[in-house]
Length: 87
Length: 87
Length: 87
Length: 87
Image (cartoon, each protein chain N blue to C red):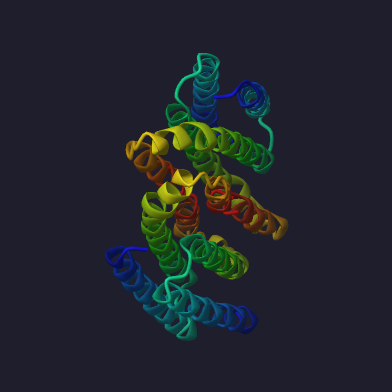
């Protein structure tokens, strides 16, 4: 992973952790469920965005290198990732 | 697209069309909404499965060829597909 | 289901069937996979929108009536629908 | 929210936070992207499951009470949650 992607992903992960901790506090304080749910959806979206960053880095580095050295496994992994993400 | 994938995808598309036509009949006959919704979910899952087949064919053909001739566009397209599928 | 919802849902279902038939033609003519996939995503989104219409009608009719006559099954069904849609 | 649901949801939130912290360590140690992505998918699924628990509690408490006192807002909120979750 290149350094820019890594730094960006780490920043997003810290942010998502903080967001979850905030949601935990909301639940402890018995916040209205609908408001809690809107926040958990927001965290899930933030994680999906971070996955997009990871995937873009992966495509332009590992996948290119894998294909160039004739490694088909890298493509099977991609297919599996799509299947998992799209379930 | 290789012939096996094409045939498989066409078969799945016909099936999904038939399924939608069946759901249309259910709605015309005023079937209970929950039963209609379970069927529309099933169609969406069937389409997602067909997309997986298309994607696997795409990865092992167009993507390999694209990367081998140094075409980065094929990777940007993949990232875009992932983003669209995962929205 | 009230008549407006029914008409709207039927119109959307016909449209989705036509869209799938168009995608079938694309696959028959060996259209580039990425372009086919963008269309199948669009159909899935259209079906999700139609589900939203069905659900709104369901909530304001069957669910209200179910709750008022003390029928908890209507709530279990809703929970199940969310789980199915969110898988 | 009843106490059992609250305790269960809090436990799941703590677990998801710990999982994200673990993923952050994976990224810091430059773990292979595909392995990181599989873990972020798992966290998203865990959050979706926790949402399901929240929603079930919400349906059987707030929604029942809302409908019984003739509050339609509770149904509009449900439709909105469905739309958000299904985007």
